[in-house]
Image (cartoon, helix red, strand yellow):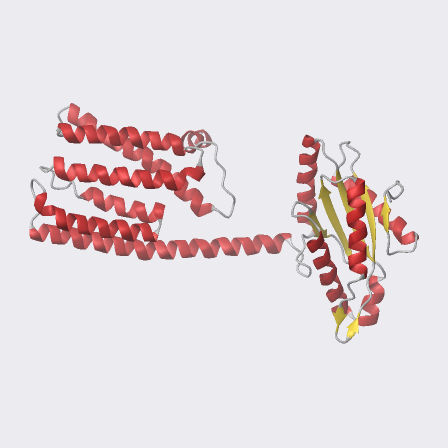
Length: 364
């Protein structure tokens, strides 16, 4: 029931997890558009029933305001990219409606209250700069136009109104700044936590859990599109000997250097993960065995040329790389990874520092 109501009000819209404030603004504007139209419609009904008489000129303005409010909601619903044009359009028609009330409903001394309800909404929807501008324009406009109203406010009344508007603007300026600052800090903190949870602390590559989850998603996409994909299993040669000879700090330097080479050599659409101590895996969507072999051979050469420095020593590094490619069957990540692992062991048996394809001859 709640989900159905939300879909009616906001449409089929989705925001990323780190975009909570934008999602709040979007939903808030949808509610304001609907509420503004309904309240104005209610006042119009009261006027028709004789409960709250409104002049003909202002009735026309209110009718237009109601129509445009609901129209803007329909334009915005399900389309968050239209947020700012819709928000600014609504603010302009609100100001026009409030000015109409000042001129044509002079017998209502409380009509100025609509300007007070306007300022918080501007700060929430359009930000501090817009809020400052609208507050300044409202205060200046009321001060200069008061004498021209059919029933001007008294000097004391006008002073109270203007002082309260300035206070309200200042209050929401400070509150808005702190709220946005808090949201930004929370978003950055959540992003850091998500990064820590999904990335290897030493190499900053995807950890095993996040890597395999990403690969599963890309496999499902490839299956729908009927496109090939390949997996590289990269294992550093004699890594235990590196640790035993040069120390674990040197081994960490080697791992970070290799990780940097892997990350810099692939496309943004590829995924790279550290899945074990000295084991890495690379998922290549939309890549056949020929493309995978070319990349694997390039990676092998780049790793061989690394020679990372630890203290005054340059450490020789090589890697054995196994390749497995989808055969257009319903292959899980576990299956294709196991095939790439088997191909890597073939490379080890053939002398290390080489590339091997699973159950297939090299294409070159």
